[in-house]
Image 1 (tube, one colour):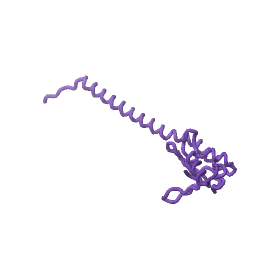
Image 2 (cartoon, rainbow, N blue to C red):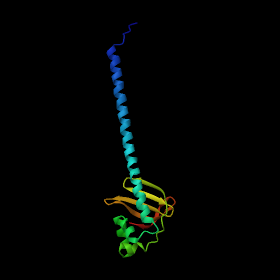
Image 3 (cartoon, one colour):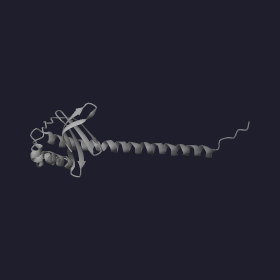
Image 4 (spheres, rainbow, N blue to C red):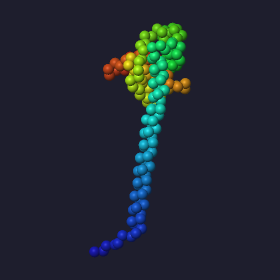
Length: 151
């Protein structure tokens, strides 16, 4: 039998290849972890602000001007068009119930939903911060929400 003894350089080469592969896998794992934490981490950062906007808008004692200031521009424009009145007068014509306590909230990108004990609100991130895009929303089973106020 002609057996050749392993050459030390071959052993070192194999060890070097293993190190490179291990580093590559480790770097990819770290990058994926950072990407996932960034994607989900940002959502968590926005939740307090989203919940605060929703709570202020849906408060039983919220005045019409405050509510109008928290509406997304398209929603305010649709409200004024539908009611043929300026926002503070128009919003009083919409039957919105007090939202109550926040039950849950979800943020995905520049959109969010806040479920409260008495209302569900949809918010959108604008250049002026989070604004209410739809309010007075109720689930319709498998279908889309039915909202009293929306763009």
